[in-house]
Image (cartoon, rainbow, N blue to C red; front, top):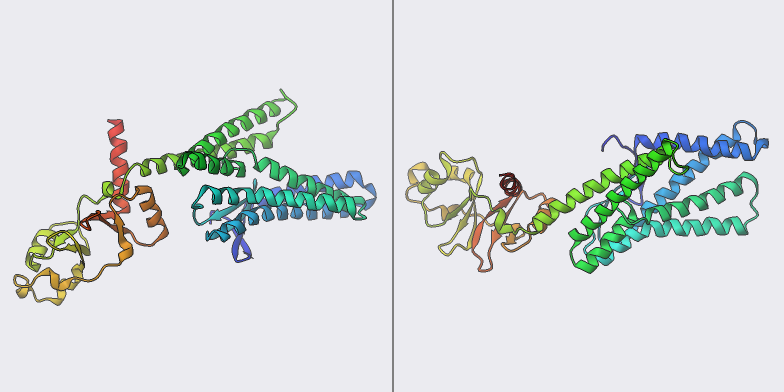
Length: 374
């Protein structure tokens, strides 16, 4: 999984850490340990660094809790969480699919910052009410600040941040189009990324007092991922303007039941592209089932001119059928959700129009791209 290391399961969710996480763990340990050593010189040589290491682990535990917030809300919506990964810039919960409504999308997005704000409140109350002192009080105060920063930073309205997903859900609600929300939020993320790069670069060059190398790096990260979201939005918008009927395979494997096996072999098998299954329809074009080319072996070749292909028909699963008017974007999501590589396209009158495959969708998009170039 992209070099990520699996370290176990959390509430049934696979948990990974990226190798970059160990670099940040070391840097955070040195930073926190150095601060504790400077603030409390009586702790000796080893204890400040141990406390720094513990603080770093608690920091990443806070990030993990943030991602679990997203995950638990997604699970309540029937969305599977494929994994949670910690990496150099924080954490990422990989969801199996998108929420079905803008309201549900909003709840998933806001859950992470909500958990961080709750942790900020918890650590703040602990610092104010419990008799804590010395480095323990410092660590609790630090965790309160970190969770507040984590919440506020993620609420910035631009993808891939949580605020971008919140913005996406709001635009989705207003326009009624999830792709419009995705594109708008990804554009905002790209602007955010360029701002981060500019601030970081000015700081690195010493022109301003704000910004650093990390700001520059985060800006690149945001810009790169926002660009991917924008590309996804453009592709999805393009697919949403087509229907299933537009992507029917031009080499349609649809045959009529009233032909003989010999006619079928001569016209559809010999000299044609290799295909194992053919769709069979009646005289009105209504679906009867499928025939498997391998079943031709069950009939003696001497009888092929006398026997009809209707004798070889097998039933076809109903879940392989889609309406001709169905958005191609929804068709693609169906193909991604199921192992089926092809779907049967049927019009409102029940007439079979043809077969739709992943390859035919790609061919449609390639033809459109070539037409624009020409």
